[in-house]
Length: 445
Image (cartoon, rainbow, N blue to C red; front, side, top):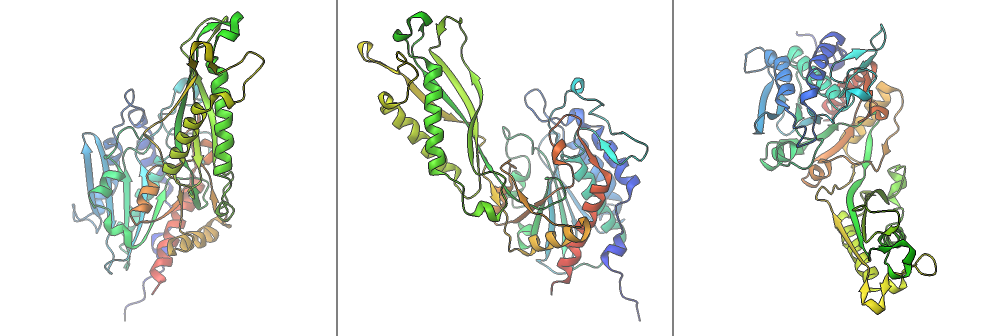
């Protein structure tokens, strides 16, 4: 009689440091050509995809060396996605790890304490792995690649298919249809809808259960340029913009106050609207500017609709324009209407095209419960959190019917930052969390 198969965690083991670090070093070594900020920086994710393929093809059906089904999908030259499947025995039972993106944000070597484009260590124990992409998100690319390779090597009998999706073009939204959005549109991820989808692109080893939507806006004020010694003859566009923005903020916070669900999801802040940037055509100190623009963003908890907020902001601006005489002014000669000249100040609000919706994960799903149990088991505690930082793409996945949960094993304090790094021990715990999740789902009848 055959002996029973060992538990998955015993069969797969832990994260093997040497192949993980060796692969990560190759990935970080490509980062100068992975920076995503067009037109100056257009990444070539194929460089990473090839390293992933080199690691997995030896245990794939392509070579006959293993069971992995490996597919590279490209929508534009040099920019690929990679889908890897370890086939299970029961149709419809799936667990997926998605979102490990192969592009990075730019890095200026002159501002770093070490070379951002190569993997380095800061001590003999080599716990701290340094370089652009170690936290976001090439560390996760290497991590999930090692998970899939171990499954291909060990060949455990699983009811669930385990699927990993490495994606292009996460760090920039000016180009669309070439990353996970293209894969969804073409139906290549449809089978992932029958099980939990873990988006591996957050940080700090805890379940991230909510993110914010983001609405970039620009408020342009047009007044009347004039000599600063004759302020009564001018319409000061800067003052108009400041007073209008204060009124807009007041109305926004009245209409979109803290939502009752924000406490359940542990959001650190409610929805906010704030200016972050000023611009104007230029002029002398003795000129009252005739136009200026203040720009900023709205961070919106996922319980409010971004499209409704955009509609309300346009209503605010239209109403202020119609009632400029009622808008608060500054000082005895500050005014936004010059009746004798039949002149009125004017406000115009515009929105960038890359509006993002926030997401609230399903707290009742099997995937969320498995993630929490695995985190408590491996990390020692579980503290789900939410932030009004924004993650692109995942709300669209949720709206398409995917059960999206999010986690990550880099460090939030180094996300998009100078001197980015991750810790090997955190990545090793992430590996164990993934194995625990698979094991828990396997135990469900």
